[in-house]
Length: 456
Image (spheres, rainbow, N blue to C red):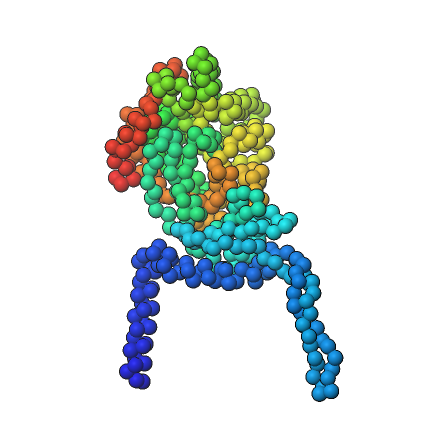
């Protein structure tokens, strides 16, 4: 082999090693400089074939030069001539130039006549396989336009700790499949329903909420129907804790009475909710964490019927009226089905925030997501057992996403609860109306000055 060939092979090997190292150690720049331009060219070049294979084209009449056979010459060769005539051709949707994103790319399409975004949603899986990407999500920013968002690799395989939020009643609990933060914002979505089987990540999400809300000037109330084993380690940060149904009924009565008193305060001040009150008059917001929701509705015999009915009615009243008066619900359960009674179905209707981890029965997934989107229901049933923390989330933007919460151990949540125990308002003061909160600006200044408990 000549020296030139050896030199060429050495250069190619060094280039391949350099590209591999570049991709391994700084994937973002490698994606923007090398991988995305090649991907964009491939997507544009194959769009006609992909659209035809996914049934996204339409037949349109076009004038076209066609070749038609003529007479047979004496030599036996068929004479052909071109003719200008109108024929039906397959027309693909117009595609703009793809744009890079952190985990893939997105491109805008112009829909053809008679097409709707659902046509592209139904073809999303075929599009993902055609282009060799992890997933394709479809959105429609305005009529006649469809945006395809491609995820090249799954961002939920490895979820690192994200920065804490400095906004009141807002907690960053993980990451969405788009690569953005998964945020639970009680001001925007006041009530949440969180379903999941054992070891699915349901309790981990509650730990993340406790850790995120602990430094904030809010009151936490726990309903722990497991005898207190879930929330007792956080009792120093909880203003009240109910471990039996009787104790939960008492707390619910207090919450209903608290709503009534705050209604009177808002009515006298001419405010529609507590957020329109001055800072010195605004009462402390209350976040109610409910674990094992089904235990509030189960009956062993008929003697518990009145207690269950009272519990169901009070919880539903809190869900219906609590948002305006600073009372928010986060209800968790392994089994949430219509067989628990009409109270559960009515409560679900008030919980606009939906989170479905891996579940053991399809009815729980249907109860949680069935009234939102059939595609979300299918994705929830496909969550594997070896990916704890992965869930289907109905986001505040009206769409659903795959998401994964970052891991928060019981020790980390307990440390946060102990560290900020001095910020726990007494339940008697809350019920009496003596607990007031600081302003949002004071909260932001306070959170900027404290150490992050996750780094402890």
